Length: 587
Image 1 (cartoon, rainbow, N blue to C red):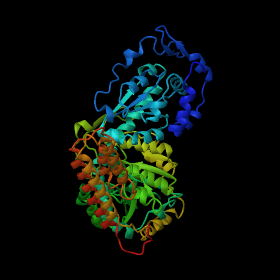
Image 2 (image 1 turned 90 degrees about the vertical axis):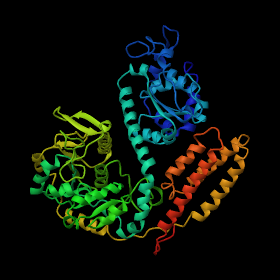
Image 3 (image 1 turned 180 degrees about the vertical axis):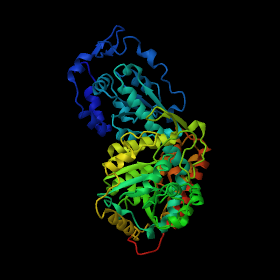
Image 4 (image 1 turned 90 degrees about the horizontal axis):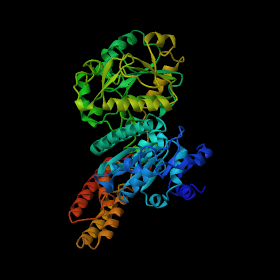
């Protein structure tokens, strides 16, 4: 097309530099007639796109007036800009031309015809080749993959979110997609903050628990063991106090489960679960035992994330079964030996994913409020039942009856995460609604509907089968032997340190060589999938030296040495924790 001089070249470049996006674009149903009829020169004499109402996107306002405020004022080198809506390229080109080459630009466009119009007007090949320009399809999985690749920008820069005003005239899809991106980035920001602050604690807990996990067994026998059964997830929201006693009188024939921290509240409600799950890595979880009846809990199995604090785990009075979760040792090193779960941001999210994996026919949520009325946020017995919350974390919203309810940013993040899971998991979800936050995708029911629809019913023999699988899960399993790394790592990193010491003596002259050496160490630290999770902070610190700096000064050498010293301390500690002598097969 003569009106689209760069379209063919840009699409070929996408096939080279961004195959997933090229595949998505190729799968779209393109309205070719719209491509030929919608591109025109408006009354300003500039290229424009004609909307369905016959008006151009820029009829009322020139692009230079719209995009003059799209300025990157802070940390431009190490930041990124997310643009929703590309029109024919004015906003995108403004950002590309006014940011450094290291500034990442991600463009996403809900309308494929407009995307092609944009690709047809400007040669974007140099920007794609340089790794500056990236395209994101309107697919949430692809979106999260791109957001997760911005970890360096989250730590060392800023993420600028730009919703194109001109494109918003086309329809509400731009605002909706922008809201989705904002939610995903907020969730990832929480995840990044948690990882940055707590990764050492979480993986450190796994290392302390490692020898115990070998003898405690595996959740593997539970896969599919819930077939024909209904499951009840007992949260510790305020509505548990209302519904718990009713369920205790007539529990039906279902599998009941809750969180470790929910056990005291569930006990007060009169229900004894078949098992509980613990994922919180905080040492403050030890407070659970202040209100827990240990005698009552001694025959309730605890399925624990391997990141659970070692003291909390050792203090549990009942049987324990390990669950390997992502973000730690299991992510890369054990996925061929064990099921590795994405635990999510909340234990109820973990339970929903776990029960779906177990194959339950349906899942009933009880006391899963994600909010509260008045001042009481949890049922009596929960360690946070009398908690007060930082005003900055409070979210005010309405319930199904239009009443005011209170929540927190963390609860809203977890609620959105569960709602996203409900859309994709195969198990139907029901919510015994207690007047607090609505859970999209879960059908609200009352006690009458629960009994009428048989939500507490199960196939004959199903519960006994699940209990048998639960007992089998406590059988010790063989794990691979991990060869020590510290000697080889120490020699390699000593050599790299000596080389950098020599280069820094004439640092002005050796900038390029220093940068190359920093990159080599950065890639060296990332080489081993087993050690990578525990070295998360050191790798991110090293990325700051290797990827977030354009020049080096003498002060950077002590920073480098500090990172290497901490790295070797961790590698030696891992070697000690993982050298469990038994009859395991080497790996």
